[in-house]
Image (cartoon, rainbow, N blue to C red; front, side):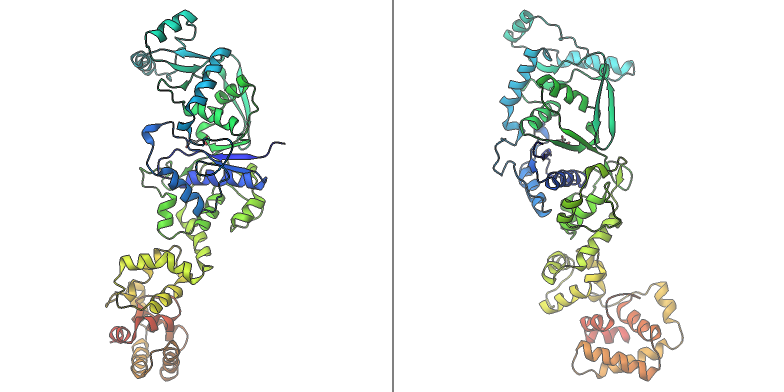
Length: 474
Ligand code: GLU
């Protein structure tokens, strides 16, 4: 058996939405599950979409996600270059070979002629398909045109009869009638290959055994298979994966403002959690477990369990997974994902490091992502708090005023402001006001924090400080 080799082949647009990242993770898992290699290939044949620095961006993202690249533009490897724009002579060589074999042909059709054809097709309400006009040019005609400096592309010559069939690991048998396959362009007049050509040449030359990609390529794959057959090459295993949709049911995109990996990362989502969540999006293990480390995923990943139906990116589920990971963070990592957001939102100049650390740590079990620290802690950064209706209703219960009066006295009596002393003050209130449980804690919590739930009350009161607590009690 050949060594398993998979590739992630992004276009360098400087943006990686979570659907693309999920593909990369799937490719990585298939490779590593089989002790194989994972390759990064940059597909920059559409030079208009290229963004400066995009390759570094992809490297950073994969590194953060703990996806290790075995071969790629910045790694060693014997199948390079790994950037398509640096491989133009290779594509030309193979395109010419196809022409010689009679599986491709030069096409000199002008943009105007093609435009006419497109209009015609539109008028007749049929899908546009190149009509094969240049398929049967003689050798002399071709030479003449080239001599005259006419621009040409190289097109694949499709069979006009029969059916192409292949097996996709997720979707099963895929059949397409050959007459529906267009004589697609392989090499453009500027010498750049199309994706349709480059992906085949590169996947073969780079020894790729498993191709995992979005299912928008599922119906074009028979064309790629014809190229493999023309060259007599072994075809890879195809694993097409469904789309990840936004909550609105639309395809994820930058334009729709959908979350990219970096957006999530910058909001304090943890890469391990994002990876964990994305793998479970459209793939399921044999058990009901939902939390997996990368190593565990490598062990159990089976691509035949990838689902055919589109998955919807569900931020609530991601929050749930992320909260799970946040609970396990050490304090340093927790500070890293929260403090920058606190600093941006609030003036921390009069707060000690100790105070900030304690604030963040008492909220560790209460936040789903780093930036959420801002909203849950706003009660520490304002004088006045507003009570919602539920709080107001609770406060109207009998005895709450008395409890608060007693508590206020106890707080005033505290000499040294410590969590223990605050706890004692609550205990004394319990005794002196003869209240317990909810009737003890709730009025104090509501009056001092404006909320009915939160971290341990003595910790919270400690961080609020004596002055602010007394102000709110008064
Ligand atoms: N560059 C292609 C894309 O970003 C890759 C498709 C593939 O993996 O073959 O859609």
